[in-house]
Length: 112
Image 1 (cartoon, rainbow, N blue to C red):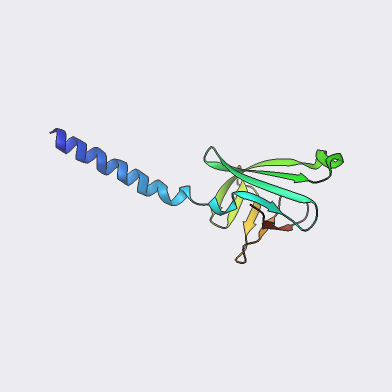
Image 2: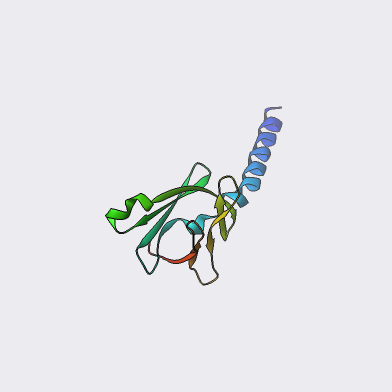
């Protein structure tokens, strides 16, 4: 009976890992520091089953324009706002990041 119970629990654990495994890696390519050709840097980190994007301008006098957004992975190439109402960050085939977080879209390249 113990062997049967142990086998059943092992199968259940493996099944839950397999089902969750596909979703946990979505968005992993976004993690890191991204920089545009101007003065903006976006840092993406994984937090609490989602992602946090922090956008900062290099000019300390413009720090009131800094923003922080909680995001979730819609796919491997798209992060959307936590309420899923708007797309925020998108990975291109060439490895660049397109940000829709501000009023106009902007393209970034990965620094770290």
